[in-house]
Length: 344
Image (cartoon, rainbow, N blue to C red; front, side):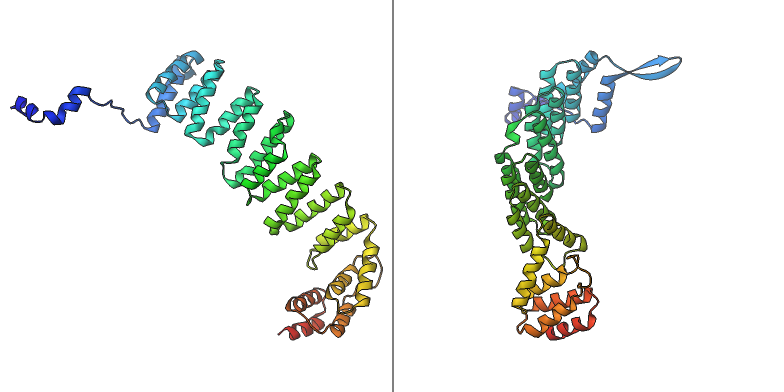
């Protein structure tokens, strides 16, 4: 009966009879692998009647780990340990090969590869790995990697990571990562590449309006380094915000004072408001300037807004709200209420 069964089912069994059974690879749990790695690295010896765990000689441990590698060639823990042992044995080519393979299996292990190249003083290769990490990891981790890469490039004169093309590539790949732009601007400024720094500062201002204050200061500082004080003043004046904090406002007036332009600025807005007392922008600037012109007793904003109220016929909603907010901040609730009443 058995022979008949084989005969009748020959077609089904023919591939097995012809080619043999497929290789059987038993599944090995992570815990089993960890135990095997430990057994390959350490041995137990008795000292004074007690068991002690003693590391095996590096060469012997490497041979045992190699046996594990033959069975599990893609196990990251085995690859990592094999690379470590090869490096200890000065088998650097093998260590590099296994670390590269480890990084291919687990991209987080590119950190291992970068560290290996750093120890080997292969800084160009290290930079290449850091670049790969920079363009692949989560956004919040990129600024630290970028800083590390730039520091490496500066220390070892890796020019390809310090030129405008690379910076532009970093900016393109990180349009939503503000700290990257901040580091780009700072790096270019330190390198005295002011034109590129200014370009990135202005690009960042458009992309990250919530960081506008910091970026404005960087833009102004860069323009001053470029010996363009008039352009810096024009940009700072255009960015004027009546609701700046006291610190931000003081920076603006200190800037004008450093350029010996504070009194000239005051004279200009006084003249503009005198010429046209319905000029809302000039009136607001004048009202706020009086707190910073170093003249005693002229810091009341009420007279300015009373003049505006008398002279200005057509008000926008934004102007009415601004006037009311500034008056409330100055403790002039009654006058503020008149503007709010007009609004509603």
